Length: 546
Ligand code: F6P
Image (cartoon, rainbow, N blue to C red):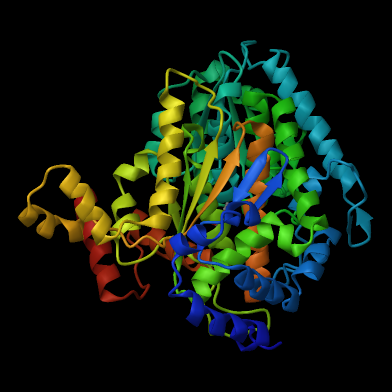
């Protein structure tokens, strides 16, 4: 297949970029009162305003052509149909089947996977309700009120993000903790807070071979057995995995295992039983509402033409900046404290999916793929990295997320929050000329010399892009929608870049090397050749640890 940067659509965009790069967004807004309406899409109560981007209708036309020519519409159908689009692992990509709320058959190798999915959902419902009602108790008969999810990457980031996002829906008296890092501190700090008699550990691992998760799980198991004895394990440990054999080997009763399948990628797995902590703490009804929200986006993504398709537009705007403006980063800033872990979750989703340099034809790509993503909750980040976003030499396109209604409407907190997010988008778009800065300084009573000195520092180039996602309130449904929008955005970009967004071979090298180094640290094994820096560090660490 021809590399995308050699296609006609790409070349047209490159040509068009030469024109757009000097166009000011403030002029586009001043010239067209209808611009916001023109560049806004809506899905239920979710509004996606992408008018503050360096685009015109012509840009959109060219971007849509790129999506058409790279086969985005057909590939969308292929994913939902269960084609093996994860071609390096020969797997279907069917996290969408987990939230297929109308239960239409979804075939993998000719077999409808919906009955199995529904059976696990039913098992999750039964189990989570039994725990919440105190019918499934701990070994000593006490209610299980401390939920501890042990997992890493996709087996942690989705659940922790969602559990925190839905904190307002937590059952009274229930607490939830997450152990992911192999750093013993992660385990120690959680175990210090909980009581074995009231704790349920969820060992979440797709493969059940991940060293961090299994080491943490063994430590927690020993802690529990030391306190309550071996028979307690059956009442205090459950497993979520695709690997039944390893779960049994670990010593968890298969009855306490909740299965998922290899057509669900780790970073796409919060919709499976990997989301058990969400169901336990917020209730299965909220977990199902999250699935409903994601399903509404799936339907929209599958059935809406490219131009009105929110994930497609998100993806195309990302490509516009990444590949034509040469901007290889973007920030996601939710103005909602409960969404504080959303950027961390998206980092894995986007960067593990699209951080690839070899295309589907085995060739090294000659264009950039996945950007660097960072972010944090507003307004906090306004007081950390926003200086660079406003006046740095590098442009950072931003996604702002804001709920119209807060879960905690206290005084005028939420109005101040909203005013801030809207002000950021406006300031980034409009900027402030030196003339405007000078006028402001004069109005503030500054002297001529002061104005001369300060006006340059107080001016902003503006013309910096942002998207605004406005939702009514961050509930489980909306959360499901937001996550699914980004999942599909990442998918569309992967299609256009012609890469496999569903493997993660790059993570393997570090894992392999760590396994080589481990014996050298724990005993005196030698003989492995390292670079001299690594060898020196190993020796020094060994001396320090003696
Ligand atoms: O970081 C690599 C990775 O394979 C992720 O893709 C995955 O989410 C994580 O490790 C955890 O894997 P598992 O769920 O198999 O323990």
